[in-house]
View (cartoon, rainbow, N blue to C red):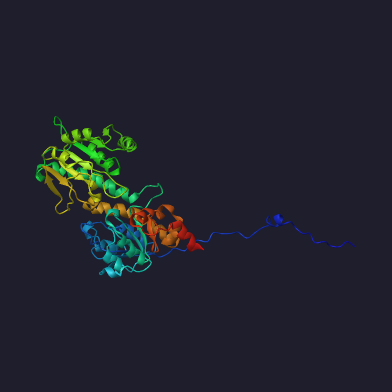
Length: 407
């Protein structure tokens, strides 16, 4: 009688046996609490979300609280927001209880005092205007802060910066056309000319997004365009994007001086990554420009690239020097706040919707490297290397902070 023997199966064969199916567990949507205070910064007319965006978020379970009259300057009213599902708050303190704060202007010291610990702030940072005390106040509140200027999208571009630059470029030419008219003591000429009458000449300093959209608008209106920049790559890219051959040059004083002497409009669209914009046009060069010509210094946000530029306001937008009209209003997009608000909302609304789907804003940050690029403070720790070097504050890599939190 044969003995029954137990057969031992090799470990690798055991792995081939039928196993239970491993199903992915769905992430439970998170109900995020969003607050939008009314902007009290001088001449800030934008708001971060439109009623359409509010409706999208509320319908997905988010709570949105907006301070009364927050959208009035953009001609978006409390009734528009309440019909979209937002709660209207009658004191800023009620808004600052939100987990996520959205602002169209940089947060002010008084607003930081109203903030709670561990809140998330999404707003512009306006690097030339901030100081170390500003950062220290946010760090003390353990805030996670994202800057409009640093947020990237899937195409590795900066969508809010680009949108505002498009607006500034388009608007600068429309302003120039207005100031050339006799109504504003200009030369009394039509920017694009007509049959038998030569068009105006527009000189643009810079070849970035502002310059590109200023050139497109000027060409569309029939003006002659001259573009200056020290980057040959930028000039080639702009030439390609315009789809039309225009005069381009590196910034040579002799060539620039000659073109400015013949210009009817000069647009300053120089951007600096390191603080103040360099002065490209000296006072003596402005003095030789034609009487009644117009300077629109879009670079005034960073100090201006014309030596004669001085900050003006939307209420008193221009002044004359050497008989040349100067328009030097910072934050040009606030002149068209409804369009600018829609542009910002187009970026923030999908981001906030994804935060709800991901199970919270922190989880979305962990999953989205482009959004992480916008973070300059994480739970009170400074994560932006440039700000660290500028203000001599300790810097901690954001990926290290995420790694430590997961341990």
